[in-house]
Length: 422
Image 1 (cartoon, rainbow, N blue to C red):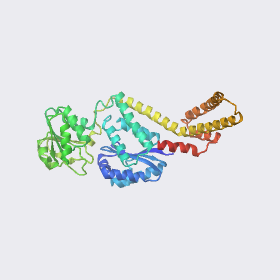
Image 2 (image 1 turned 60 degrees about the vertical axis):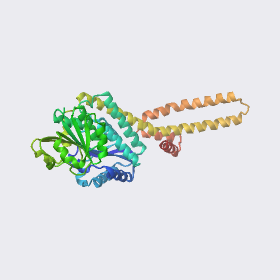
Image 3 (image 1 turned 90 degrees about the horizontal axis):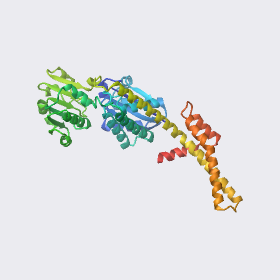
Image 4 (image 1 turned 30 degrees about the vertical axis):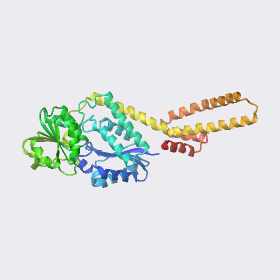
């Protein structure tokens, strides 16, 4: 039977510079998914790659082989030597893996605790895995449940009250935005959040520069304040006119360099790899806030909210684990009841042959009585085996049930395969 494995690195385990090198997206992400999927004893894989984490969620049959293979593939696809990468990797397995994924969905593991973007990022990771046909039933159910847990945490607590996203926390360091001019570089989901956050803060005008002009124009039309799009080739002139610059592109190289800045400016770099050359910090009147600067943001939710979310995670992990246990017991219970039904049908058929004069009403009454007796006899052991399955060594009780009732080992396996098809 396979188990959930998490292998990854994040802002908690690695410096931003290493996260930038390890980040994968586009074709590289697709290739990583397929290569992990091809590893022996890996049944499914989902990869979460964001600005502050890259994590591989895999359904594996062997722990050590899974960790070794996934680590090597992460190194190969990120071009970070395995010896260097291994120092920053963390591994979670089985129940701890489920707890980690639920905590990530709730924002407990985010650079800014409680930020809500991670839910969208998890949803995107699942869709990408589905599109590449690398997600199996177990992983699909796990990530779907993680999304539900994340929503529950935000509905029942104030975990996202203080800092809804990296954007809001970063922009809070720019002071008042009222009536000022902003330049947003990029037109992806993070840029969309930046535009919405700037508008709510009372920004006077927004200019959006993007490699694809149409996408920039589409984002500008959705803004609730005056906004317009420009070609990326006009970025230098737009920089000179902006008070605030938010850059979050998917570029692999630098987008903004010191020679492009003329005068005081506030720059928020939310890209990974970073868009803005750190050398701009040396320019007079220039403030640069990058992802690494947000690592220890003070805009954190109250301790009470964090503790409440942790309790939710613990509850949900326990419920999920019990569900897994019930799922492993169910095929054996179904096989037992199926065998009992076959015995009842055979005996009723034999009785009919011996007593051909029975009328239909009497025959039906006898059949119902026999079935009720069998159901009552089976009820206690089947309920009890489900309860005992959750205890240490619980799988032995299921095996004992199969042995005591002489169940064909292939019958429960057939039930499992049928469930997978459904």
